[in-house]
Length: 580
Image (cartoon, rainbow, N blue to C red; front, side):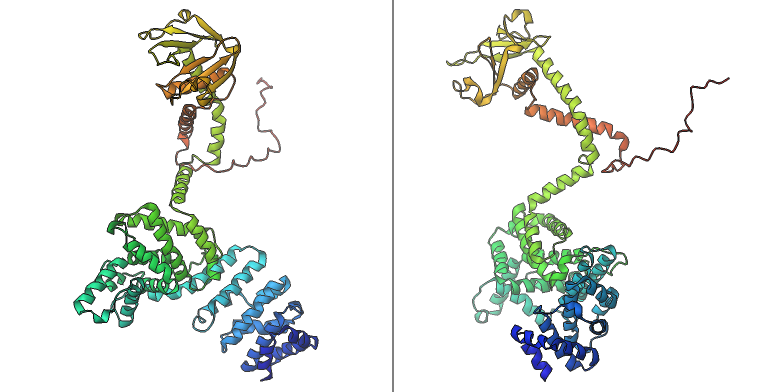
């Protein structure tokens, strides 16, 4: 009785300070080491844990006998569940307080014993308590999860989740009264209906069928038939019922929002829930025997009870969001589910440690982000974004840019016909401009409409390239104020001549050719859209040609290591000595 009372008053810090100052905690340690009575042990350990939680004394002063006794309660089959729970709390505090204590606990409580013991503890022990102890024990060991420890976590996760397998393998065959009540509870939670008792049998049956159809059941007269398929079997009904009870507002919003849409655009709740439950079972590998070499575990499992149900509640709302983003119809159901599976898989692969973190990440990974990731991965698969290929692109760019520069200058030497710009109503007067073969003069002059390529000698006006002081385009051109059309225009300003305006409204390509060509003459970088497009095409063609011999050969991200030079070069032939 005294120990039971002590366990209650030990939560008071003032009492704890006075009790510890009189070495009361050492007396409790002595009782634990010597006693074998379960009732006494439960109250003693509870009081000890409450006293130590105040942080008045260090955990490192505990004896090895005490640690072995506490570890023994975890290693053996529990006769008293409360002893095992408080023992786990004590061991967890030891592990987190000191590395030396961690090593002692690790020696006494091995991972194999914990995982083997876990299978017998589902009905008695707080599973989350044990999972958190194991996870913190492993993480504390080195800050990272080693391969061997990752396997233990994987096995622990598989063993725990596999207790859902019976529900997943059980179809809804008999359609018991309990199952019928659950399905009708889903219907009534979503729709506010008049009292059904006052309705005739036929009227009530018709109303139920109509509302089950709105809920998304394929067989609205007998919705239990939708749950016959295994997996997911009864597990799909469990997840729907959990969502409706745990998050009633979100459940009602989902159903009512979709029931108000056109039939082809509504997202069927029941059908989506059944398929989503199956996807989660496959991702979490529920029902699969743990692999002897497996190490793919989810940290979120160690911080969340009822992981499957909570993930379902997050993902069913994600599914509705993705359905709207894709503007999906009933024919797109399979495509939507593929995207949702990808969203869940990608998010879990980032190893979120809590449900809230998972929720934030998976909702940020919307449909447009999935499309971008798919495109990037496709390019990686084609090896166009592999580091060696990107490096090769950079090496090829100067050569290809020079090729484009020469092409631009050649086009300027051929010349182009332009329409004259006037402040008055535009007339059909034309003039021709071309670059001299030595790239030093721009020749221009008036021409007739039927003139194709006048000889350079007939173009009397000239502008020395050396006298060009600036090249203006678009709204920067002075003549844009006089003519506010959306044509592509370029203005050349010279030190010795009035400005020369080129109106190439009839061709964007001509505009790009002349702006690039004039930029080359002035020693500037080409910047037109046409240049960028042509450069990309040339790069793509050149890369494909160079990689022809490497088809189906994986390209490593890093260059192979260059071997050390040989110790001698005696194997080389000496050409200095002539044969006799």
